Length: 279
Ligand code: C2E
Ligand code: CA
Ligand code: CA
Ligand code: CA
Image 1 (cartoon, rainbow, N blue to C red):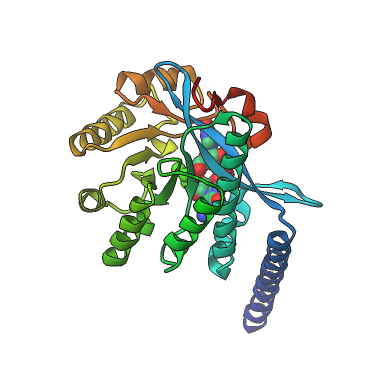
Image 2 (tube, rainbow, N blue to C red; image 1 turned 120 degrees about the vertical axis):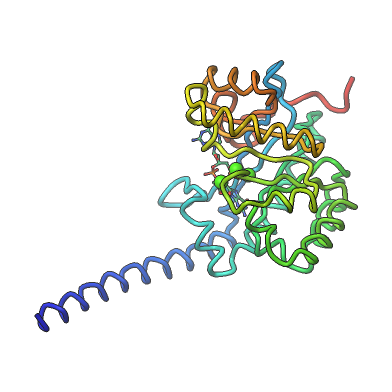
């Protein structure tokens, strides 16, 4: 038994080593990716489901890996958060979103506000607001053209700092969306305190619409609460017409999902963006 125990242990140890090696390799590659500008943004439309008109975009990071092809954030964001590389990644997100907005405007198009995802770690970076302001100035991005998305859990710690940062971002004209709403810790008190502009209902509540009575009830409750507090709501992960209609029936008309638009490179979207400046 002792023998078995030891061999099991060493087997486990080997597994651990393999995972650790893989991790270090990914960390090293991610560092190169940042240097070589292999991290780029794709964009997905936020849509007014009543009319089908696009009202803005969400920027979503992709890694154009020289061998592995297009790598999705699920495969590198978590590691980047653990290693701290998420900070450099996040600066790149901010820079690229501002630069793209400037390019679209220069070519006579405007996507409406671009939402960028920020990690909790970045949100606690003291220079955040200053760096965003600097990128906005450099690319002539004006208030209201950029918004940030944070998950509930990133907002739950260190309220004073969070409030200060939000106030500074708000001065710059950046509104806050609470991402993946309903999946994190219960933060109803925080909604009152932080007054985000928007809640994004996680796609977990959209997936089983229209058939799930539970999800209909939950979405209805979220809509009622948001309305009472004067907060807008966007539903994520809308994939079917039936989901669109169920959400519309519940009063949720700001929607996002594959049904309307898959995340895609900026160039693929240009034609569908509003003409700018308005004629
Ligand atoms: P998220 O912010 O909740 O983004 C929504 C995710 O749902 C995206 O996955 C998007 O591609 C996907 N999605 C959109 N519509 C549909 C749909 O109809 N059905 C389904 N099944 N999925 C849909 P993606 O692009 O893989 O990003 C995953 C997560 O990675 C994001 O979740 C966000 O938390 C994070 N992320 C992405 N870009 C960045 C970034 O620049 N910085 C940071 N810190 N995090 C990012
Ligand atoms: Ca998001
Ligand atoms: Ca989300
Ligand atoms: Ca998510």
